[in-house]
Image (cartoon, rainbow, N blue to C red; front, side, top):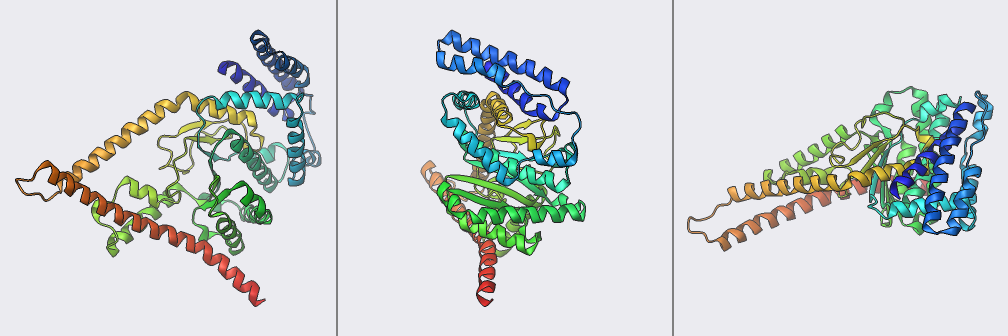
Length: 428
């Protein structure tokens, strides 16, 4: 069944991307889609599912793509791209279609979703949203329009992740290296980000209704003042939500993140908050921007590039990596299912590797603690166990206190931006 589903996913992915290809490419994609749909229909007939059988047989004809002109003008290309309003209309149409028992796309999505959910689903997925600029060039659009379409695709992808049961999503929105791009592009990205955060704030009741916590990871102090305020308000507004978490990495690189964590720990050692024996991998992890968030089980990069670009290097040590050929604005529901199927193939091996590694780390820490215990020569095993317990308890107290201070300082940064804005508004 899973192999059959993979054929449908591949065929549907090809159908989705064929709209921007030539007529010859569309014809070959139609053949692949037709064959996969027929294969799935035959399997359903063998299982005796008559209703699904009729739906999937009908999909053979309805899913054939229409040929598109090989060249499009810039104006025509722009008209084909979804704006925010158009995207809302599409979402409404999909919701209406899902309510209809005879909707072909709804049945295909439902069957594929339930089949994938029968296996392990990652609780945390990270995305490197690459390919916005290339998509803009491909469709004869301005670079900023490509980034805008990328933001719209992110919104759709978050909905798909919620449908799958993914609890946490982390996205690479803006790298510190992106500051090296042209001034016009950087300023356009900052304006776009500010617009999206302001729009998010305008729908604050939806944030609270769906219980989504928005966190921004990175050196926010490097961003324009108005964007800092918008980000701070969104973070502060949703800070207590727990149903789902969206981590937006903005003004971020993993090297910068690890360096900042090392500085925090060095400060803690100098101030006496920490002792040298407290420094461990666990402490470093808890001082990263991601804090106590679980590492991503699946990391996806689009556009065909096979590199991590300084994104979550520490956290992704045991992540399943999937590199998709599609450009980010073209990323579809079926592409997401391909990523999850890839994760399901290698999840068990990765989890076992992580378990063994953590066991080795714990043993090394225990051996180090025992080595430095000051015990009398006639100490009994019970005395040694009690002394070891005391060392671990004291360390835990110091670490929890230190990490708590780090969290409060970060929360106060966002709260101070909100408070400053409120004070200005009152003064005016």
